[in-house]
Image 1 (spheres, rainbow, N blue to C red):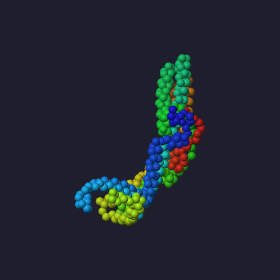
Image 2: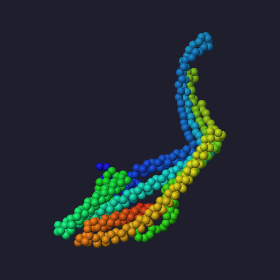
Image 3: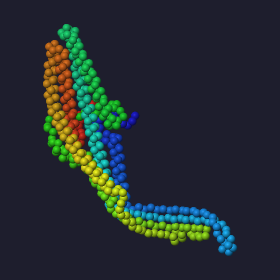
Image 4: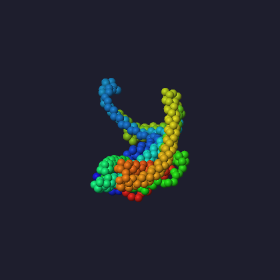
Length: 440
């Protein structure tokens, strides 16, 4: 059995546990971490590129040949074999003294790219946390709906037994029993659908946690309550807090700065560049006619020097100008991206604020409706038990109560989530008070 399944079987998961586990095991997050590490490596490489280069070389050549020679005394041509060896070695070094601050601006660009990637990583963590909260609260909602509907099914089954006795005693018509049994069948189907929804909600949450199985998977029940106090602040004040440290805003700002550094790099292509080089070398050569010790040869044959190179760009097929134009367009794109990110953040905050207010109003309206429906249902149940109303009227009252209870539960969890989103934008952690455990 895999460790992930064991982990799911040996603990009850709070919202905080789910978020922490997801942040450690989410595959997308791991990919983004690799991307961030790559950006860090690019930054280190750009810093190292300003250092001088130093390279060594060595070569060994062997030459063999046969050629004609004239004897100096006899004047008779003869053929001789000649062999020679040639060995050289040396080192050379070079450094760019000035190149339009290209290296400096490249370092700046990579620094901003790294910072942007780090903020992208934080933004992804936030999105994962919010998605986990949504899935967690969906489990709680579906669990509450199952519990409520299950209670209604039990009540209907009790009414069936009571009605059977009344029918057997001749107090009510058999049609009442048939209507109640039809209601029970409808409620059983509804309960089955809700249980399926709960199973899917558990599966969704487990998959978001990268768990291999939902067997024995359980979560902690928080004490979910609706605070009667009005929501603090307003969208504008919450946005003023969020825009200062939200990773999506910071990431877009760093991307803009990276684009500005790209423009500086492109403009550096118009500047002359100055570089310096230095070298040292030595060689040894031996033939059939001339032989010397290897050490003496290297000692006597050497060369060294240094030089400066000035490169002045005159015409490069408009590549520099086009590079500058492209960099300017990238800046414009990054500016629009930053503006869009800010607008999206404000829109999300305003929407969450409006949804929270609407959910709060819906909750209190549905709560009043539940209280009224409970009274109406109790009155209808009493009348049904003594035969003053038929089963159809009784079932209608029961259905209205169940619908009101479902709407109240949905409004409650919608309100809780939206207020948690607002707290999240304020920089507060996602957390729920814990009071017990619910199991699948």
